Image (cartoon, rainbow, N blue to C red):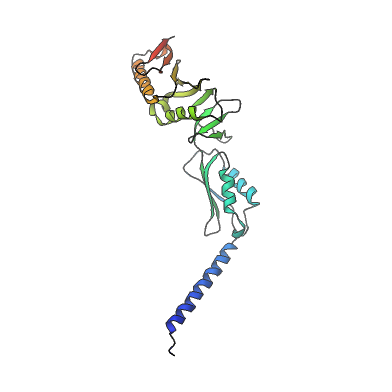
Length: 239
């Protein structure tokens, strides 16, 4: 019987590759992990520090330095970071050099609620605690506001954030007990009464027209209240 040496060579070559892969994987699993590397994505101003993230990793793993890679529960570490109210999302992995890496995206505040226990509203409409590390320059929210019911003020705050005129001029948002909204503008003494948030774009366009005309005529300080709740007109109350 003729022996097919090509098949034999292929078999031994395959066994060699499998053996090398298994050896490499076992060696990689036993590689000791270095201190965690923390990367913050897209933000210069940190509401949560590198030290805090590092401590979260250490506490939940019982130490992350000089431990075998195979003993680290990456899912547990990711869950610990993602449960932090300052963090929007986090990914944790060990790179080929044995470095434990955490890529962190912070929440982005769009308004600050002035309450018995003040807090931020983030850009997803969720509660975000204040930071001792950095204070965001965002509009204040006052009035009848609960952190369990933020939808109304969130909608108004997002409109302020996304509109160039409003983001430049609005300093505060006030929610009344009936959930109607008032605004305060920078360097203006009058209250802007928005009312309900239906037809909000139309109301804001009316405000812009009024502001431009009153600014040009230098009569902005002649009013105590600017009422936007009517579709086709702006009703002003003189001081």
